[in-house]
Amino acid sequence: MLHRRTSAARTSVVSAASVTRACAATALLAAAVLVLGACDSGSSSDSGSKAKSPSSTGPSVIAPGKPGETAATLSAEDAAKKRTDDDSPNSADFEYVEKMIPHHAQALEMTELAPKRAKSTKVKRLAERITAAQKPEIGAMERWQKAYAKKGKPGAKSPKPGHDGHHDHAGMPGMATPAQLKQLRTAKGEAFDQLFLKLMITHHTGAVTMATDALSQGNNLLVEEMANDVVAQQTSEISRMRGME
Image (cartoon, rainbow, N blue to C red; front, side, top):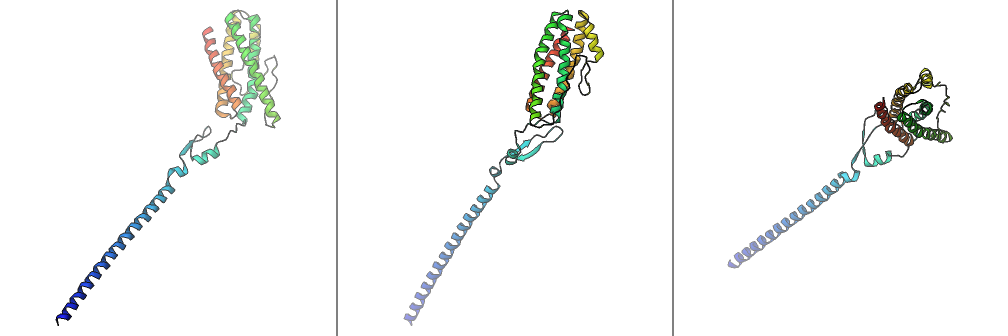
């Protein structure tokens, strides 16, 4: 009887130990599952963050629009594709060069009269400076026209200005009328000086207006440089002439 009880007790202890070991194994298995799950979750999170990282797409770029157009927000990649070095002249460039050549030519008509008809030494020197600046500019603009004519660009030929003052004034602000040029050719001394300054201030102001329009509407780099020179130089000369009146 005692032997049976001892066997039963031993069996109970063994069973309890087995249960304990089973529970511990289950707990370890559960912990391992949790750790693996956390690793998977971390890996998934890292991969998602990499996919959404701004570095993969690059910073956005503000691309200014053409005159009258609003700026656009582009990706760095799109901005690089959009960026070009194309400075092909447009209609505003051709129009500026076509009209500024006879505009400059009329200024030279007036300065040619100064050496013999002006009284003021300052007026004579001013006329010399205007001639020295605008004569080469006419040459540069004519070379520009020829260069793009050879490339098949639709640049119109400028009319050759004569010495009778008959120019097409349309779109060329500041041009002296034939009557005003006739009056200047007959004036002498102080009368010439005063009329010369009056006409040349108006003429320069018109040239600055034309150059400003070309800067805002044109596309060609060389025309832009020529227009900038006109604005800078003739604005300065306008101030000088006003101080001489």
